[in-house]
Each structure stands twice: as structure tokens, then as C-alpha cells.
Image 1 (cartoon, one colour):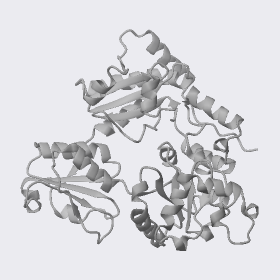
Image 2 (cartoon, rainbow, N blue to C red):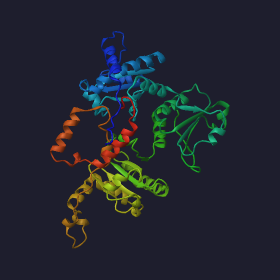
Image 3 (cartoon, helix red, strand yellow):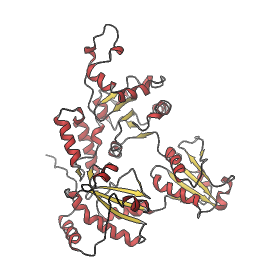
Image 4 (cartoon, rainbow, N blue to C red):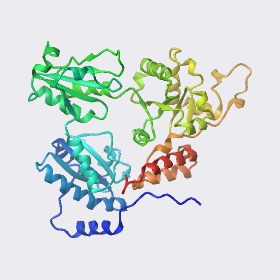
Length: 443
């Protein structure tokens, strides 16, 4: 019999010492408690803030408290200025309005803020003093690489998205705004800068910011707005750095599900770049107005065999397009119809109108039925959601919001399909997470 696999927990003795120290040490660090009256002022004035959203009844929240405080002590020695780094916490039972504002549904959740703006990626590393301190050091490191020769720009990695700023001097409002944007988007783009004589050839009309997209022959794009207008340059840079069609993996699946939008997914073989490019073009052509209502994704057919099997497909059938609404999966009838004007958009609109769900349960609407074909013969039951199971795993050490748990229980008890499960995908996802979870007190 194979031995059971469990996530590693901290040594009980060490954890007990931390808890005792936290409870009885009168000189322990003060973590800033946030409420509706002070949260905006504190976060807006902090260069970097790490916020612990917790619930006192959750034992994993209790376990994190002394670790979080000790990490704060370590970091405050390195960054003593008041607003350089702030460690803060929110009691989500006492301040449910704040938890709702930031869409917190599990405890503890560690969120990073920069000048009041919440970063989309929560902290998912080890819950240890060393790991949390290292994470903050990484966040405080310079996100912009300074080049000493323009030849370095010519030899950039063309598989990455690169943002290059050419400035007369580093001590300028233009560069400070650029650096602030880079702090937020450095996970999505590579940021580089050149100054003075080195950058002069690229500053024929003043300081200049250029986007260099992936690909050997892709043309550069120049930012034409004010370099001191943070909102403007941030919006422009985000549009360039965050692709319209993103890849979903088991590493980022939970993060994507937490955005709360259904998925429109292209399943394709990894080396089938032609189908991916065609999908990207049609999404940009037909669905740009739907960007805030659905996530556009692509997935490796080999890695995601189980979702394909769930819709009665195999990698041999790829490319395949499907919608996962977190209730059911719906298959786009024919990939070859992708470029038919309006076809892909209608597929998405049919999701929003409820037509896909209605037709899968009751057969096509009367206007869509071929003459003489009985409606009831076409009714079917759609496959349940597979990617729903990439939501927070039960193997991660957290507690779900009590309100959310009650809602899920009511949903399942009432027979709602939103409570349906895809157990094959669940096992696959958990297997991947357990393989990666040889961590100490992993999020």
C-alpha cells in the first residue's frame, strides 16, 4: 500500500514557542490594525504594505499571527522608515465591509499593496518568517534594470514583453512615475531604462517610453501621453503587459478562478502556434468589448487532458474552444468557424443570456430547431465545470469564509448545479498541488 501524502506542518515545539512568545512578549512588534476609518490613509501612504486578512476563529490565522509579527520585526530593522514597509491586519469578522471590498473569502489571506493599490497576486509562499521577509525584500528591490549601452536593448529576450524608458536624468518626475508603474507590473513585463548620453539618441523629442512586444519582427509602440500622469501611463503599460489571451496552468489556475469571471479557453497543442494566433486575432477582433465579463485563456492539451475528456475530447481533437462557466462546460461547435464574423462573439453572448445553459438542458430554442426535428430529442446535460476545481484547494491551510460556506451548503442542498463537482479534475489538481507542497506551512 502506498503511504499517504500530507502537506508538511511546522515543528509543533517551534510553533508553540512562537505562540507563547507572541502572547506574552510585551515588546513585540505592533502590527497596524486596519478599519474603515484608517485603511485608505495608511495604505495610500505606504510604499509597500503587506496585509493579513484573518479571522480569530480560524486556527490557521492563529498560527500565522506570531510568524507575521516576527517577519515584521525582521523587516523593520532593514527598512526603519515609517512608510517604507507596513505590516497590517484586518479582522474580517469585525470589518466584513473591508473583506467584501477586497473580495476576501478565505483566511488567512496575505495581500500586497503599493501606494494603496492592491496587487492582483496574493502571497502564496511559505508561512515562515524567512519566506515572508524574503518576499518583502524582493518587492523592495528595483524593478527597473538600468542599461549601460543601447546594444543591450538590441539583444533583449524577444519572447518577453519589454518596456524601455529613455530619460535625461534619473532624478526626475518622469522616471519616478515610470518606476512606480514598474513596481506594479514587473511580473508581467521586463522594465529597462537608459539615462543621459546613453539614451540621447532615443530622446529626440524628450524623454521617451517604448513597448517592445514579443517576436523578432514585431514593431515597437511609443507612449505618446504625459510621463508624469500615473493613471495614463499605467493604463497604457497594463494594456501592453497583460495579454488579452493568457495561458492557464495549474500554477496560476487558482489565481484566475479567484477573478470570478467565466473562462473562454482554447485547448491547443503546445507547438500549435498557428491556432493560438488565430484565436488571439479573433478575440481581439470580436470580443474586445467583453474583456471585463469573461477571461480569454489558452491551455496545453497534453496538460489538461482531463477537462478535454470531460467534454468528450482528446488531444487528438485539438484545437478545441470551450467556455467554462464554473457551473458547466460548453463546446464551441467547430474551430473552423472561428473566423466567421460574429460567430465567436455570439457564442459568448449566448453564455451571458443563458441560452447555452437553457439549450443544453432543454434542447435548442424553437427558432434554432431544424424543420421536423423534435426539440426533446436534442436535449442533453452539459458537462460540469472542470476549472471550478482550480479554486482554492482544501489542501492549502486556510479557513473558508463562514458566509461562503453557508452559501455553498444551501446551494448544494437546494440542488443547484453550481454546487456540482468534477472529481477527476479535483484529484488531478490536488495531485499537482501536493507535489508542489513540500513546503513548510504552505499557503
